[in-house]
Image (cartoon, rainbow, N blue to C red; front, top):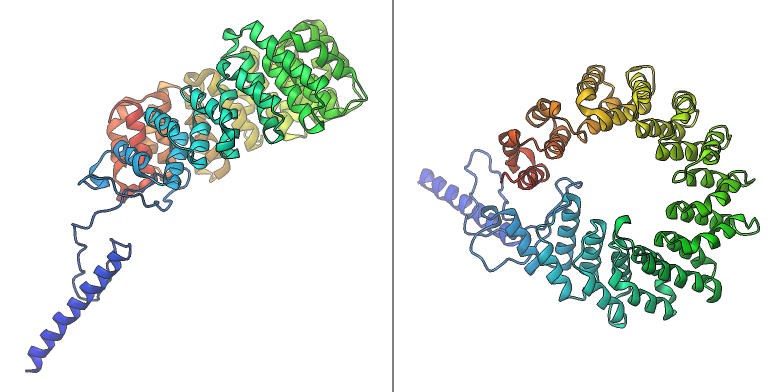
Length: 512
């Protein structure tokens, strides 16, 4: 009798365990299993469907998924393609889920959902959704939302401020000619909350989409409008700088005389004179060169350093001499400006100065810019200098990594293996910062010689190495490593973030 009761008690115990698991599942934990010593675990009922999960940004590994209302379909997310899951989020998701998806698309730099995003933007006034979509399209400079953005400006009393601001910013980033009238109307409305953003957007729209597409009449009209506002509309100190920047964005010669006078006005605030110098450099017209060269001798070190940097687009002996003099300036920002200008000009006469600064300057930022300039000049002499900076193991990690980056950018086929050898040396010596720096720049390099390295990273590295290996595969389109990439699709083994990145890599290479 006692033996029979023991069996009955055991089955009652198991039954109670099953009830507890079912209760846990109903409370939102479908994977809950309570461990019982020496007893079989209760299995999770298969008929309980998982809710589709919102995509999390790749740079936040294993972020908790946000619940999304289930789409009217019988299959579970595990049985559907990633694209279908994302389509469901767009169709049925909350603003938070859609915002998370937009951030993921931004990180992945993909565009296969553009049509759906344009459609949802056309039919919603949700500030978070619209701001996210405008930001995504603006960052990637993609057209398609112009009508919705212009409508947000015209119907701004019915839209959230965030929506209008993001719409204005988007129209500026894509340099929308069609938006010029609406942007000018918004400025004329006197609504101060939008002015800072709309000035710059108008300047960009005035220039048009790219240097080759510039319409002089359109850019001049935008510049004249901005000049008139500055001179006659009392814009206030907070807006003056934005107008100056916007004049530079137009690329119009019509603004050069005004900007030159502003640079020469020593009674004016330094921040406005510096903005005018940057604007003259952006326009790049020789009419402004004299004012820039005069500012190189300014007693204000910030104006002086900005002027030296602004010499980059200009040519001629006077500009060359001014750049060289910038290397002798005790103010470190002037030396940075000289290096940047020399690199932009590819000024070979500056090479000895750049080498000296790269090897000996006591300010790391100056050394960085000198190394970048040597890379930009890119002749046999500068490549030899960069090679010696990279191979000298007594140099700082920062110098060696920067020099290696320039070598790879200019000739990855020649220097890829050299950097790989030094990376392995750093690993053996446990020089973590140096190893990480070398592997990071190698995964952005383009060279067929790096395929074996990509294979090793994917098949035998840690999570970070495998992720960087995927970057290398995608950057060089190593389609021969498709099977190695597919091996990372196992979420249980490699995690959701890495698996998702592998799937995206296959998709972008057309291998999925």
